[in-house]
Length: 99
Image (tube, rainbow, N blue to C red; front, top):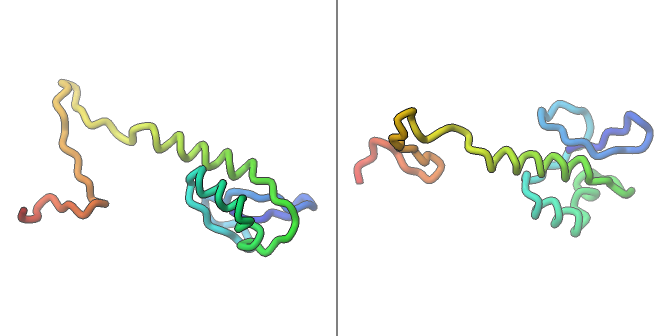
């Protein structure tokens, strides 16, 4: 996210493509992380801004991201309803590793 001062008053904007000018701050796309950052006033410190920050646009982006994660990314079944095995690469499982 970045503070956009184009309209006069700085507005907190989610910069998904990381291309906007200015000082930015990172936040996990999780509602708990946003609540904790607001509670600790971490956004103002990270962006070096002492004024009030409206987090409505950030909250909407976090909610939108959470809704996208709930929906399945791809189907695990083929047309005849036979389950297709999936590979959990993030857990470190390698398909050809000896067990």
